[in-house]
Amino acid sequence: VQLQASGGGLVQAGGSLRLSCVASERTFTTYSMGWFRQAPGKEREFVAAINWNGGSTYYSDSVKGRFTISRDSVKNTVYLQMNSLKPEDTALYYCATGPAKRFQVTVGDRESRENEYDYWGQGTQVTVSS
Image (tube, rainbow, N blue to C red):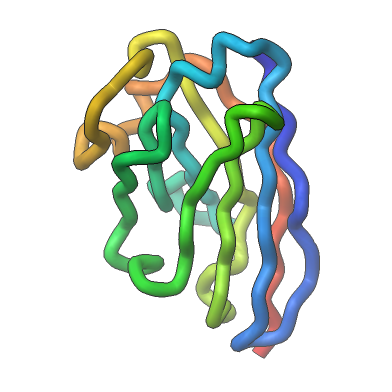
């Protein structure tokens, strides 16, 4: 599975962006998906996850209430709608998935661990100016 993330850019604080992650195979529609981010000089951190049918989502405390993860199985795409952006949201954003996440009913804290994922996109840069 190849993942292609896009949608990053430069935005002012308080603004919005929508990231997209397109998978190369239809198998992806049966997997949970996660978004992670890595700021300069910091470790990669979990942002959000969604199960295979969109019925379960999970967010880090730092983005809860501002970001929304969703998916469109017809388009083989997962989205991350980011509102009320803050300078501390500046990072390289990655999408990830893996066969261990097939047909999960719910997503939770386990999806926040990087070693749960086998496939990673190349990242898309989000920069929020103050």
